[in-house]
Image (tube, rainbow, N blue to C red; front, side, top):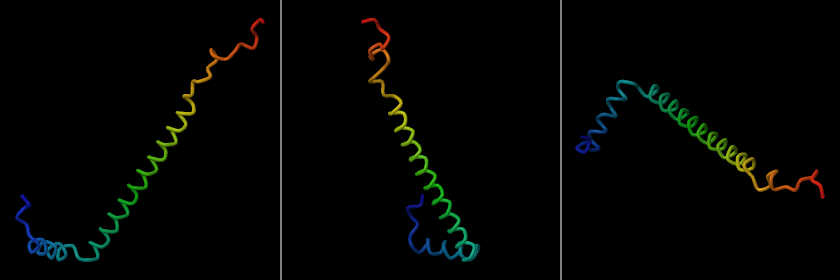
Length: 78
């Protein structure tokens, strides 16, 4: 569908978009889009950090090497 679009056609589309919206609106739209992407990336990295912390905690809590059944009884008769 878009395989027949060349650089000259893209330039024409860019000029039309600039004429309709203006440079100020496009600049603010670009900065808003950039801040949204930045916020999304920070949210994803925060979620990854929380997931790693939860994994670390679950590994510590799931250590069943020394269970009460394996420990010697303190009140057992000798």
